[in-house]
Image 1 (cartoon, helix red, strand yellow):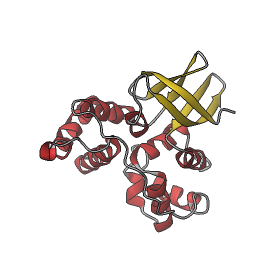
Image 2 (cartoon, rainbow, N blue to C red):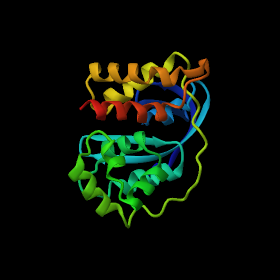
Image 3 (cartoon, rainbow, N blue to C red):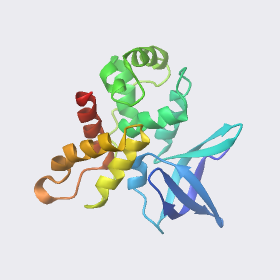
Length: 204
């Protein structure tokens, strides 16, 4: 129904961007990586997928069409709803997911909160002929998080994925040396999120 939205970014929240389109503000659910590339008052174009439920209409936004198509394909697997599909894309790029499925990489899937060993095995079977082969395309790096903003973005992303605030605090502390190395700008939020999830998986 709504293939994309294009307009000025009117507001940014931990998991949502509001894009003004023709005088109407559309709330779009996005991954931390997508949100890190948006700026208040700046124009943005997000590929979107509308999820219709009896009691809600939710618009999910993506940096590009490949991410959107992967989001929709993931939901063709049993037990995968929009929130889990978005969590998978918060941890892995579309091509990383295609590679994981093509090579039967259970570990990559269990790095996503909410997917256990059995669930990963089932997903590998169901998605094998649906996601397609990895394209090998190198995606442009997302803009790095601001020097002070990465902690808040990462903490919010972890809590949004189901971790307790205390666990999120510990994970943020654990990746701080990587984020602040060499005094340069921190890496993209998606990279820090993957590192944080690895520390949480080791701790459990």
